[in-house]
Image (cartoon, rainbow, N blue to C red; front, side):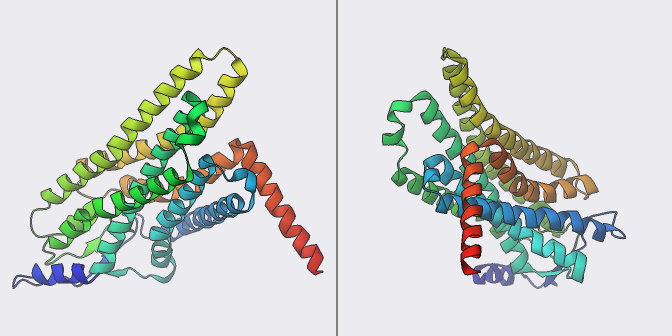
Length: 326
């Protein structure tokens, strides 16, 4: 935070500097946008609840202490982080009219959103790699995908995204904000904030695009490669039962991955095409940060038998404890 305020002071070259931003919410529907807060709040609460349930279940059920579920647990942690970075502030804007956000807070939010999106993308890649080894090299699976590897992959993802996205908020803080300070958005998006700058924001847009395509683009490329190899290997299997089991695990991954990356592309294209902020990209941007966290647990919990039985065990344990106390 201190770095950012230092940057701000440094860029204040004898011009008037804006000290805070005002988040106006959804453009064009200010009069009735508070009605959107209810479905958004429900999505947020369900995302937190469902992801917490998945984490608790994986921790408590020894049958789920396998790499595939560890990655699921990591995905749940990232989802909770992503949803919490944006939703409390959005609900505060709608319910308490808390539209003002300081510049360091705004840049911190830009940083956190980029960081969590990158981690989500990285987790999808780890899950694809895990399924690739499990299906294409089943005999070597336990020797390759060890707890050590999971730990290394997690540390690598945290470092990669933690350091990789630093240029985005730092470059945003370098811009000179001299007059306008109203953001037609309910969260601090890099392009929304830098469009208020009085100087040229092209470096920011270019930097964000390069980072997004380097990070998420390489993840997506490797994910597509993994699933292509999985498909090739599954099609060689002689038994239809083995093939359908392998595909059912992968299809739930693919549903989420397709949703995640199509929205990334749509958001970046609409942002680049429209310098002004129409409603659709802003709404998409918010939904993109709140729908995956609430969708991921549902897709996995509904499609994975072991997780469903894990949930039942957890509920049975908590019910037994209650009856014992009574």
